[in-house]
Image 1 (cartoon, rainbow, N blue to C red):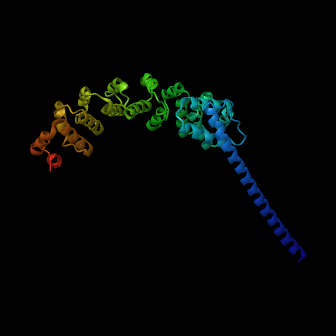
Image 2 (image 1 turned 30 degrees about the vertical axis):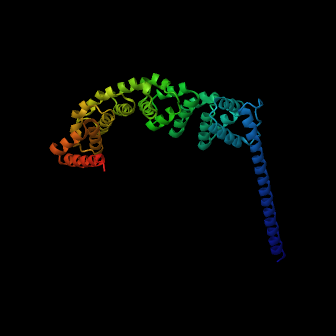
Length: 340
């Protein structure tokens, strides 16, 4: 009986001891977190003074607080557009955090590595470029390779472009995200013919997105490319940056044997530039089986031929649906032109 009482007493003592330990540890963690937050606020002020040039001395980093430093660096570089301030931040990261990021990009956990790549790109940490490039030749996931290439675009564009010339698994969307890190597309344009198809399409997509009219000649030349996807991207880019005289580049795609995407893009371009002589190329597509092509054809016909051409289709077109669609569109346009 005494052994049982002793055992129960011992359990109670252990539980009380464990509870006291947990309370102590919680208070300790709260104090540590308060100390970290106080240090972070102090570091924030010191970082601002250093970045703006008010102080020349670089802020000291307490071991274990690198995560807080990273948060403050991200916040500052996202908020400031002053080039001199950003350059001082890049110098600070290279001087104080290079060993930290060298450890992070070798970490066994992929999430830690991916976060490090994004930080390296943000802070332009160029000394790690060669090591990142070497990782592309190792057995790593496709996701990680995509992120590394994007990172290299930010810190070593020549290495990224070199990779873009090699056979790789990077998709069109991955290429767009990578090239999109470049403010100036000139280096990509100069190497365009050596790039893989994904990157060629990515360049054309960025030309379209950014309305890069200075690359018009390249876009024109790619409207006849043998690769259908490159051709479509070039046609799409031309709808945004092309000139009125470029409408004739689209006439080869206004044929029955071309894809509906090419037909639609050609019609959209004609709608924008509205050359009257293009009506003859538009008319065959008002009766297309593709809703997208039909819609684009009627928009282009209205822009290039006006209400008169809509009326002729409504009256004489052999396709019943085309006549019905033209009648509805004509009624809608006439209603908008009525002045009450």
